[in-house]
Image (cartoon, rainbow, N blue to C red; front, side, top):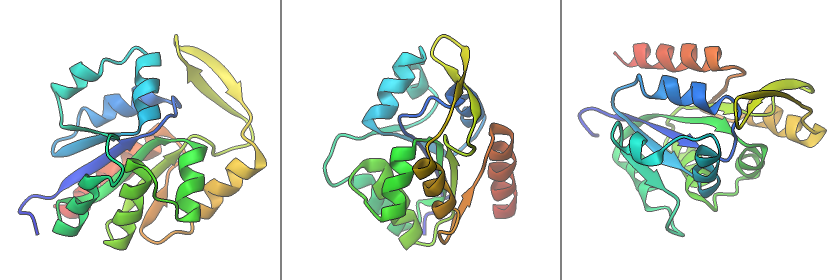
Length: 180
C-alpha cells in the first residue's frame, strides 16, 4: 500500500453547484481530479479554467478507452473516491454496473477494492434549485427514473450519498478525520 493514500475526486457533466464543489475541493490536500469529457465541457460553460486547476492539483482526463488510472485503486493509492457533482447519466450507469468511461470505471474499481465512495448526485429531490451557467438560479424537476437511480445507488456497498454541498463537505471531512 502507498505510504500516503490520496483522495480521488471525479467531476461529471453536472453543473449542480459545481463552483461550490470545486471551491471545497481546492481546500484539500493529497487529491487527484478526474474529469469525464462532459465534465470538461461543463467546467468551460461555467467559466472555470482547467489550466488554472492544473496549477493546484493533478488532473486526469477521459482520453483512453481502458481508463488506465483505475489500476491505482489496486495499488492502495486512494483511500476514498468522491463523485461530485454527478449526473443522472453517470448514476444510471453505475447502478447498472456499466463501467464504460473513466468516471464509471473509477466508481466500479473503487467498489471492487472496498474503497469508500462519496457521491453527490445532481438529482436528489422532485423539485430543486440549481445554478445555471452565468450564476442564474433555476428550478429543475428530475424525472422519476433519475430519482430512482439515486435511491438505488444509496444501497451500494462502500457508497455514501450526500444531498448538499454542506453535507458533502461534512462527509469528506469526517472521512479524512477517520483516516488520521
